[in-house]
Image (cartoon, rainbow, N blue to C red; front, side, top):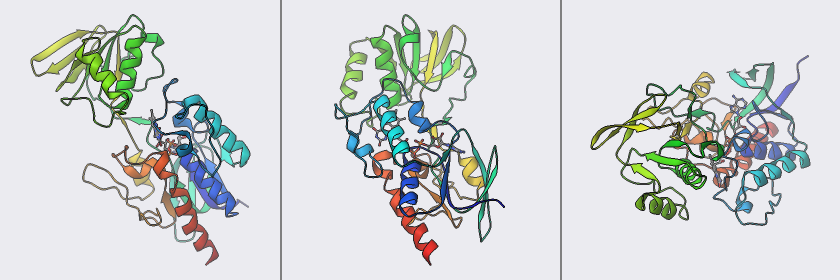
Length: 324
Ligand SMILES: Cc1cc2nc3c(=O)[nH]c(=O)nc-3n(C[C@H](O)[C@H](O)[C@H](O)COP(=O)(O)OP(=O)(O)OC[C@H]3O[C@@H](n4cnc5c(N)ncnc54)[C@H](O)[C@@H]3O)c2cc1C
């Protein structure tokens, strides 16, 4: 007979892991299903990124995150979360994707690309980093266009257009310029975003002011060709000679997946999923949301620091129900 779980958690990001630790502490029978590697989003972050949070604010399960510098980088964070996985012996099925959740009053069937699991509760902690917000312009599918930035080395001596003016774009533009790329930023608004880290913002603004990095404000990419990019600027359309485009215009949660599971999404453009902030339970009984997926298009609203508390809130609600 198929095993029945108290809880299935979709996603082994920091918040899915925090939920699993709470489930372990409450002696619930749980399983995490993760479509990639452990903390797959962090694994895919730029190789030399530094977190804006200090180490203790990225801690989960009350386990200290010790780091020589105050703000850890990707490698240190991966090391920390690997140790958490090992220490708590978290039960995770890696490289398995949750495709759908079928609900009825009694239990849920969690369907993956490998199997179907029966469970009383589900936590969706699937983040937002897997789906880029596309420019939707001709040529976006060319091999020279990327929506993720790994490292600057391939761009040395190359003409790079960086689209966007938020943290990812600014970090990529500065790193590429410092590694010898010829960088042009294309920015829809009139300035660098005010959410850019306060210690990085003057750096990019000064590089633009001195002309080291070119920037077109109030501008957008119209189309991308093999050898150039067409940009609409306040002074008309320009053709900019180009080798690579880094279109770092953000990412979004998988709304289609949430809707398939029966979760309502607001239709005000923000696409906020319907959940009770007191318990994190969605409009579908027994399905909870945790971590950044809660924010809809407001992907800046939740991060590790402020969403790790979701674990205790949700597991408090689930264990109270299990006892009653
Ligand atoms: C460059 C960068 C720097 C950041 N710096 C900071 C910082 O300094 N401090 C901070 O607090 N936050 C920071 N953040 C935000 C932070 O990384 C996220 O808030 C955090 O990863 C959220 O954790 P999560 O567990 O909710 O989601 P994620 O970490 O995105 O984890 C979701 C997991 O779900 C998996 N998944 C997705 N869909 C499925 C599916 N259908 N089935 C199974 N598995 C699935 C994914 O593979 C992934 O492993 C940063 C983000 C970026 C992009």
